[in-house]
Image (tube, rainbow, N blue to C red; front, side, top):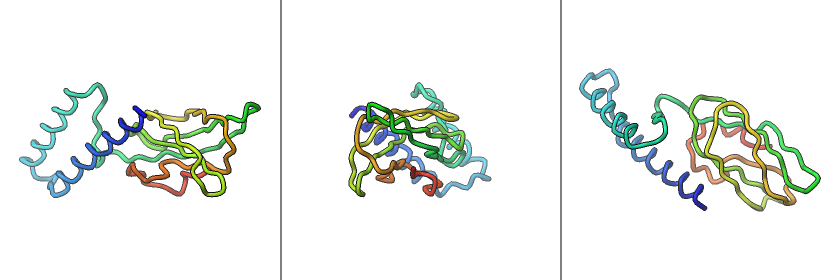
Length: 140
């Protein structure tokens, strides 16, 4: 539950910042200084590297899934970009949601473990909470 709340908070902050800075002309030196002040403030308050959405894009890809003997699943996920962001992976059976797990995000490839269950397919960000740029590679 904590991971869900963290993902929701990160999404809400990202949406607020993106909305606020939509009208900024990045070629205008004064507006760019204001943007850098906000970015610096967030960086100082956060334990994480602050990367604004206009600099980087979120693109996680479901590479494969493997059913294990104990009926749990190993899911290989690849981050196709440089932005590390929390995301969810949901399992479905007969188009009904069975369960969801959250990851804090990572660079490169990573194996996630889905608890024992009867699953037909998996989907990254089934509720479309994160601003994923390529949803075509979110199924497996």
